[in-house]
Image (cartoon, rainbow, N blue to C red; front, side, top):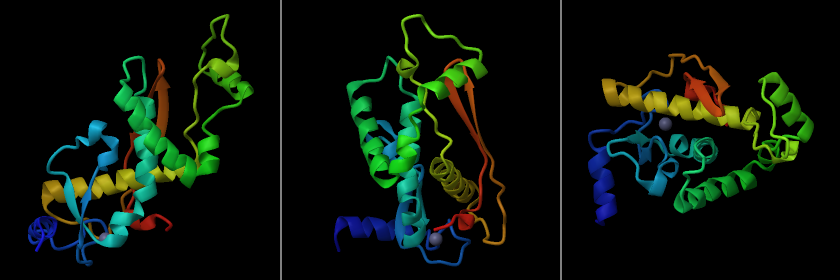
Length: 200
Ligand SMILES: [Zn+2]
């Protein structure tokens, strides 16, 4: 038996059931939550591997790319390093391919930038055109769905990690997401939804 297979078996032995779909499906994979692609240089925290069946593991494949892109874009500033810049391109390219419409819709038209400035009581420097102002929209349904799936999976994972119990399929987790902007920083506020409500 190869090292990889042995390691996987050692992981699944004490965690035989998928922790994401109610507790009746055998786990066959090790799922990293949050996804590794979210972390700089793929340095993810230890101890955040969870037992998953294949459908649950694959369900959020695209969502993870959206969340990785948003997490990185929202942290973009003058201190962003070359590596972070490079690592931001990867999920951006993936999202551009998988969700071309939602990706294009991130870019606001100049008149939308104008009304955003007005609504938030901002003004622009004299030399800036509206097209120069880096405002993006992330309210697209695909992006909101991805954030909800991400939050749901994270909730199920953390519940399992800290209580040792799997959220039953009969339970309902209410979902709520909200985006607020304060002084140029964007805050996401989320609670969770039961994964099974996600249309596949
Ligand atoms: Zn599952």
